[in-house]
Length: 271
Image (cartoon, rainbow, N blue to C red; front, side, top):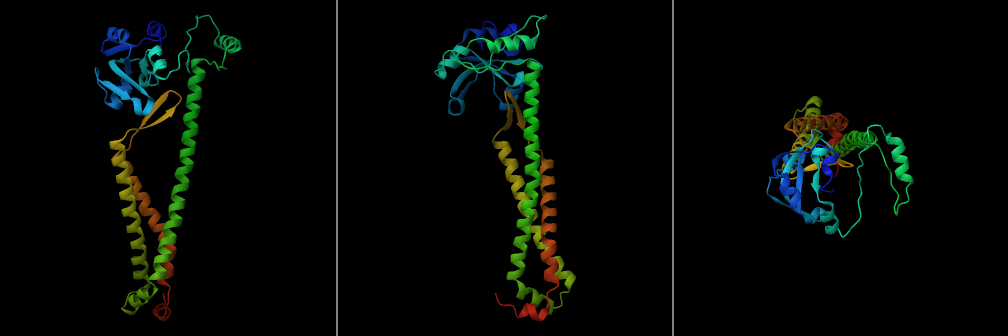
């Protein structure tokens, strides 16, 4: 952004650091309070994002606007950013402040009709935010579909694994029946083993995911809005419960078949 004009559009309240230092320093930046808190960045720190974004800047201050969208941004000099990317004269977002009596739709159509070297799509800020919400809604809908499909796939895999295990241990089951294990006890042993394996696997996977979330920040981005993704301990509990349920459901049929096997047929089974 143009440092000489950016405060004409919004009231950026610098709550920490120096606005003068930001304006004076070519590589200086103001960081939104939400982004600074999430990243753990401090005023005076040099932020090196060369590997990820090809940019390096000195944090001159932290600002707040009261808008989560705006408080997740980094404000930097447009000339410095363009030089870093060797893209003088290029911009992917231009903000225009209208007169109170102007109609945003008319102005947008007029701007899009102006002769330009590239095509543009001008929107009122409300329409832009509405599109951002639609993008998030689509992402949530896709996530829900994936969440619904995943347990079904795991359930099928668990059932197949238990079936193979029962088939390989047919003679062992026959011996158990010979030693006095009733049908119910055989069913309980096979079903309990399936549930335990799934529970341990679910706990290990959830714990690994929790550790990864602590070591690395994960965000969901919709246009210029970044939302931090967290994982409270309650998710580990839900994952354990779901894994236990999958194990029980996936093991019901194989366990029932194992409990119905005849002793003679089981003992005569060859692997």
